Figure 1 (cartoon, rainbow, N blue to C red):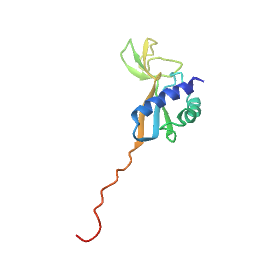
Figure 2 (tube, rainbow, N blue to C red):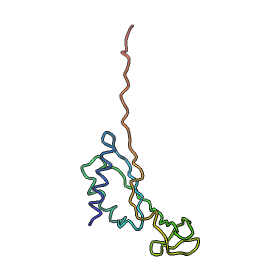
Figure 3 (cartoon, one colour):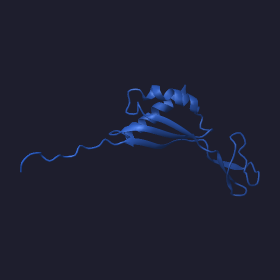
Figure 4 (cartoon, rainbow, N blue to C red):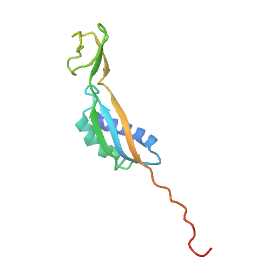
Length: 124
């Protein structure tokens, strides 16, 4: 299950970023061609996060679109994972520009409030 090792690497990044603040939400953008199975990643996350700064953080995932750049006509368009054809001219001479990534898109943290100094109470 390589999703567990992916989670552990992700949490290393999260810990570096949120060393002094508690992470409440981790947002990943995962492409269908990334080689990562989102449901397996979701199951592995609580195991990998146990005992870390992100132990209570919620993991959200959003799909990244598959996009290609056409070498023939220069258009950039969305494509399906199993058919990387240009939507403009139908060419198969395309280069993948999105859809194979796993990106830490955002990290939501809470910053603890600092105690405010209070003035002494009593006669001047």
